[in-house]
Image 1 (spheres, rainbow, N blue to C red):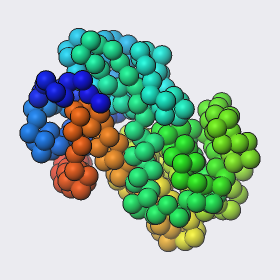
Image 2 (image 1 turned 90 degrees about the vertical axis):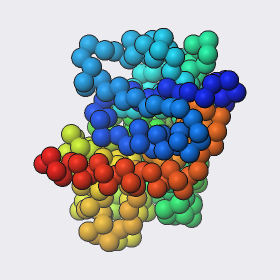
Image 3 (image 1 turned 90 degrees about the horizontal axis):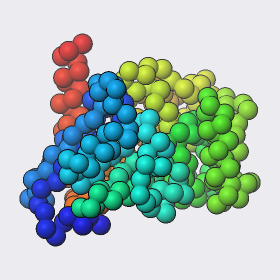
Image 4 (image 1 turned 30 degrees about the vertical axis):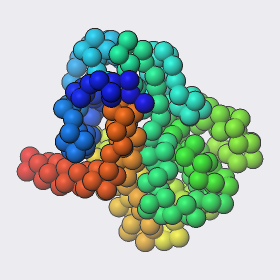
Length: 299
């Protein structure tokens, strides 16, 4: 819990990552700050627009500026770990960090709220029973993929099948999950299309499909109405993958719920105040309409 909550009603927080100018986190946090009666600002630090700024420099800069903390996204969820003073046990197990809390003395602690955020979104959208005993194919084993992989194990999947264009990432996640849950429950696929056809669910945890990274990393020919399909992306909220899945009659889940639920946990960690989840969902939905209207107008 934040060591600033008792004595400080002003909070400076943000997000460090690449290609993040479409993030809705500033709008979500602005509404949460208002609801809590706090003065706060959420600052986007997009490395694509900050030439020459590297992650260690950005972390040092926000510590100097008095930030209460920052969210971390692609491509830094693993790179941030050795720069921190401490890492929460759940984040250490996951092997990725999406939130850094900065104490008044500058000490940094990393957390992974993507894992619980995705898990809670799944429970809201599909229900826990859709994962229990299921076979699930996870495409992408980077920072987001690691969070989703462990969230799926939390939800009780029987078999997790991994694919990543970087085989080392897939193998590393398989080994980490096997170390905690047993080797029989996780493997790397050598036949992505075949394994998807035989699975109950499919998750895209890559950046492919995000605005600026067009495409669909999932072979649509393998999808059927019997699948549930989830994406971690919400920019756009309907990715090529989810459109293809919906066209086949599959149940779909976009990345909005993960964004909201991880923001709930991060806001609580930064401020010591638990925000209203329904209100944060509403703030997200309103911000999404405004963002998409702006994108359409500029097209």
